[in-house]
Image 1 (cartoon, helix red, strand yellow):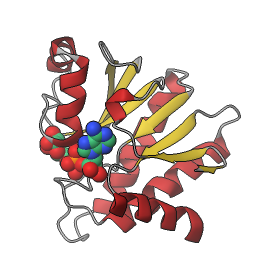
Image 2 (spheres, rainbow, N blue to C red; image 1 turned 90 degrees about the vertical axis):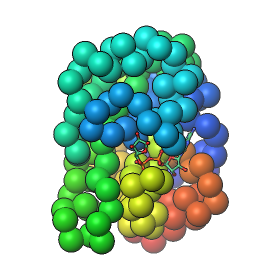
Image 3 (tube, rainbow, N blue to C red; image 1 turned 180 degrees about the horizontal axis):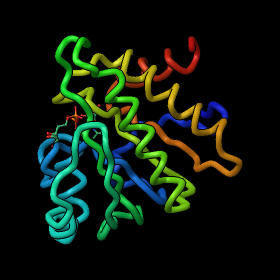
Image 4 (cartoon, rainbow, N blue to C red; image 1 turned 135 degrees about the vertical axis):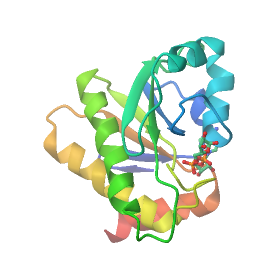
Length: 171
Ligand code: AR6
């Protein structure tokens, strides 16, 4: 489904033939479960070796590496906030993740980028609120750039798809 530069897809992010994919990582950048584990498995051990040189990443920031065995050329690793009820700056931190990823998208002239639903798995962020932030930041990036990358949001389960559809049609 297309929404002026934004598309939703169900596919495993590790299989997408886009220029860049975003990883929902943790502060160590040394791998984990969920989409992080899937990306490291598909990219192979060279990804971990590059990540080890980065010295971690604070919550809300982003780092870029090569994609190695992935179809994607680049992986942008960002660390979403753990949900603590919404009173510990979670919305701002999640917005920073998207903005810092888009900053790297621009810097590296990436023309297609796929995002997982950052923080909404293990980190427990409510899907609807997270989708609203993702859509808002994507629209801001699209509005502020003359030649923006195509943006793909990967909705790995039905609840995530509904949250994005809702955010796209009601905000
Ligand atoms: N492709 C696309 N989306 C996926 C895939 C995949 N292959 N696998 C899972 N998802 P999560 P978080 C979706 O838990 O909440 C890791 O251990 C999943 O359904 O991966 O930011 C890290 O190391 C959900 O919608 O990330 C951190 O410790 C979304 O990706 C922690 O989990 C995000 O779920 C980060 O937690």
